[in-house]
Image (cartoon, rainbow, N blue to C red; front, side, top):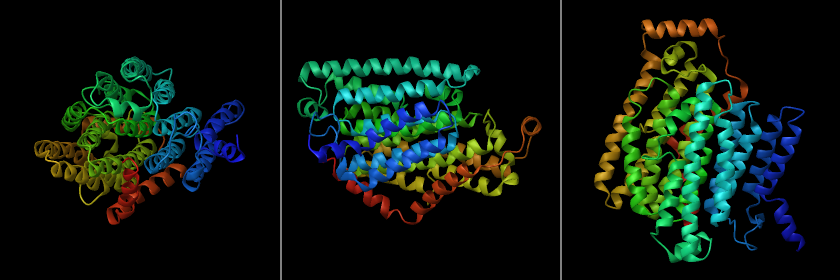
Length: 458
């Protein structure tokens, strides 16, 4: 092996993060590892952005991983999301969060079904533990068990689909199989398995209970980083269009109406996430250059908005995260209240905020491709979904504490001290909220980098 190839392997982001995870596992026995975790990820992020030509590992030798502009953008988003989750979580299981980040980096680079399966399983097993992290909580244990059972079903479908594809095509390369098969039953099973991971309807049944029962940091993790990796694979394998399109429409409708009667913020965000995945899948199902670019823009903005929203929820809400708890926020902390209100309005797609840009691009792609009826359904569902986001803003600013809400808030303040937003969450909220406002004013930068990334797929 030449010296240059050895150098490529040494500075590869995945190898560096693997070494970091192993080192931090041993180091964490003796000392908290949050600062080391964030530092390692920042170093890997710099290498990812500055040394894209040094990713030689496994590309030419056995075809398990590859690199292009599409993968580069998604890796940067995963690293940013992982750093954000570490800052949110404090010293709560940073090693497991790093393992989820590592598996997501491997997943977006994978071009072979073997590496895809191993990356997905590493991600899923880490999330099993994180979902059931509060062992003394019945809700957390229930969330871990539900996610484990349905995750096992999803993995079984994925393996069965891979076995059928290998039986027909005689190889495990994604591109090789795509050149031979376009609509085989194996690809349908794999697509259904990935839709489970994305919590797309009708495979969404685990999401509300798991989001609500898991610790809030785990909920934020489930809503962001794993979905980026699964989205990347779904785009690259060329999924079965009809299956994805049906699931996209169902997700948009169910996400729009499912949260109307929710009383807990995390359950509401679970249904919101189902609706957002529907929009992303709609872009994937259309399959044109513009729609794929629109889906990439949508998931980037969705991750940023989710990180901002969950950071504020972690900073101000109690362990129950009831919606009624936010009714005094505008009086207690006007700045946080304004940030949270604008973030919710952006998630709802209210113009001219960043969330409107992502939805508008998806709908524009749908209209350009002739999906008029589905676009009308998406607009109506977005209006319905906007009701509960506007209701949240109304609670933040205009809610008069009724007998039930008032008693809950009084006892909450008696039992809990007034929570102050720590420095790491403050920086995280400020950074993500700045991006939301910046994209509202100047989206050209995001449009350009996603355009270059999508070109690399063709």
